[in-house]
Image (cartoon, rainbow, N blue to C red):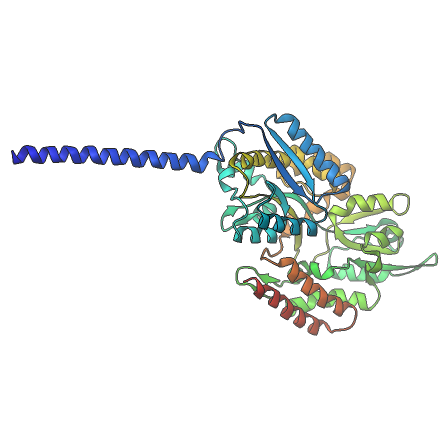
Length: 442
């Protein structure tokens, strides 16, 4: 009897264990389905998503065209573009909407904004969408995104945004003035300094300055420090590093040309493209996204072209511009729809179209290597200058408050360029101001 009782108990135990395993398996399956729900399948019900952006003029026109194409091809998805003014306005409105629980589905964002969004659990991790077998990217498609752009959108091994409008600094030069002075577009710091001196002078009663820098040259200090062989900021440790021999060399190089009159800032003109297209400045360093503006203002006035930034000890070029986030507050359907739109926005055809219309760079290697793009930059070579710097490309530190840190640095750099502080004192004060800003957000 005891024997049969033992057998019966064993059978019951096995049945109970099987039931538990079945239940556990069902629960795990349901959890897995829930985890992948938002990243699998197509949008079934009609859904509208809002895209908050800061594009204007021909940039907004190009974005509208791409978005209209997407909407016409997707019956169940409608993307509504909402212009929020400039980047500063966009940033403020995003944070206000976060507090009011009225965030859009997607928005443009700089990397340091995204860092703050991640810390506050505002943005969705896009890694599951990328890895989704049905609607994600293959390994080849993911690696097709230009390395420096792809890396800038990854935090701790996860993607929280995708690249959109990307630019870099290039050297604009007046072809006529350089040819008359028998000067080749400079490729090194030494050549840049020599060219600026040779091009500075008077011509037909007009005073010409050889080299120009934008007013916010302090914002560009990371590239100059890296070109001198130094480091700017340790993002992980939260430590300022630019007050170094390399930092002193970088700022001294710019300051020496300003002080001897062979270089100038934009000043009251606001942007250096103004003095350049009037023929007052022979060369200047500015954003590749400004090509269309230079072309328009220079027409019938000067002949011009562009070249890569002259290098110091090393070649180092900052790549800037915004990316696209999907906000966590969106519904699963909206997130899925947003992912479909992002893929469309940055596919090979559309990133090529965007670059041709705006002056920004294509964000995919397949676009850079396409016959369409190659033909275009053969016809308009200046649009191909930025991509020549991709191998030496980097992105700025992404810590929260990065813009405030740069503003603090720029304030001190300006005092140096105005002759009110020495290079050494200015960098020391910039280090203190930047570290104080950095410590606020640690």
